[in-house]
Image 1 (cartoon, rainbow, N blue to C red):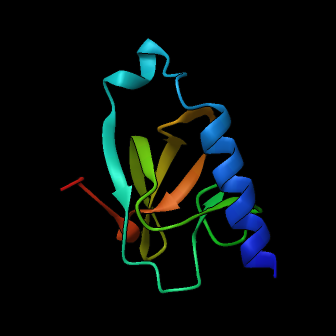
Image 2 (tube, rainbow, N blue to C red):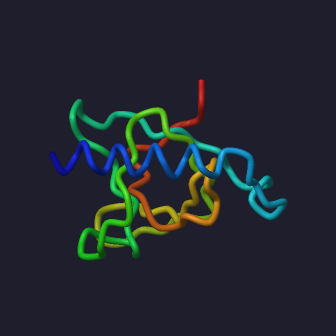
Length: 101
């Protein structure tokens, strides 16, 4: 039930902000969420680590703009903003990002 609610929130945010891309975000790497298991989502977190609150869940195929990445423990965390809702920013694990293909 919670995963469904997060999916609906993510969809609503992406739909509501479909045409808002500030110039500052255009020069950053545009990457796609991939490799998340069926029925799960990549968590956009408030900080670089699993101890931070989840802002929203991102399903496979979601496009993000990555500003920078750094290693925290054994994971590389990337500061990212949603491609279609650039005001929604947080951190995601680099493991689940790839260039769109």
